[in-house]
Length: 383
Length: 95
Image (cartoon, rainbow over all chains, first blue to last red; front, side):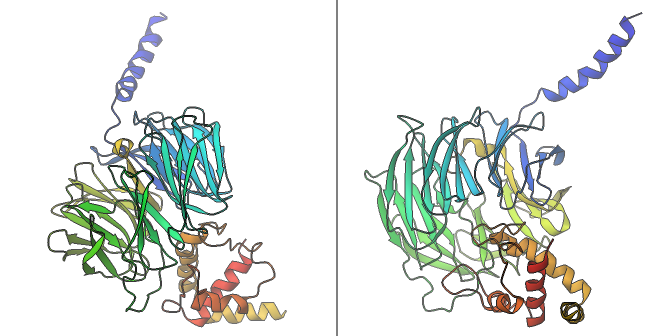
């Protein structure tokens, strides 16, 4: 008599358990910045699985993944640092660690989460398990372009003071050894670390040119390059700062978004000299290499933010101009480059295209989507 | 009374559909640097509290021509004077 309800309960529970026993390698998160929520998506099914809500102000939000690809650490504009479980779709922990943050990074051993803050300026470092504060490093400046350097290190650039700081937590996580590189250029607006962890490339807003920090040298070697690109051309207004994550290093060549010019700059990675330029439709924001590095996909600042241009790495020519719709804020490639997901903010959807034929394969409804983050980022340095 | 008349005049200068576009632009595009909630980021906070003591006439040139030496661009290529005025009023009065 008691068995019947028990059996019914078991039958109901069984499919749920089967559903829950799954890998996370084809999952991802999409930031719904106005709503302060994350959409959990399944790449293989090209579908949303559910939503995680209550994450605060997600303007300019970004996130990193734990090494097991189960948890994500979300950096919100309101200074919130949230740890979410993408399988149970719940917030595991949340701390408001600063007044205004811009991004973060996870150490190569997965133990430390570093958050770069605008207000108060500097970096705070947290225990990835508990979100307890481990180290607080004030820098008296807004900080940009934080990245994880191999060996429990982080690197960050300072907008107001033009420095790069390397924090080495390997000996004592609570008391990092700090290497400060001064005079790296005026107003760094973002930076990236190449996938091998060697080159930290800093974009400058306050002056022409870029700066490379070679982290394989001891002490790290600072090189300025392209010191006067575009100096003979009038600057155009920059309605959105370029982002530097995803800059190509293809075939020994960087493809860099220019600032104040509607161009992509091609740079010899060894010589740090300009080898070409590609004219584009607007101010580039992201210039992302398709994972096979054969093409660079570019999106744009307003008023051209409805457009994507695809540039051939061999010829440096624009081979395709796509217009997915108003407010194409971000692109994320499947890890092996078969498809690309595009957030189309003003149409409340994410468009999925074949990255080779450009054919639209599907779409997912999302509330004013911005950043798209697939879990394979867990295993990539500098993301 | 004066403010009310001014407000009506501005409403007339910027038709409602365009006003909706401008509101969207403020949140999304100004928000790229100033935050969706205008609480600041790379750019300064531009909430009504942060702008206390500033006037629309004071803000319009900043919106149209930017602030040289900073990351604030001039939006003149995308906005008329009336539209910049609408945005200045919107920022000063929002919520």
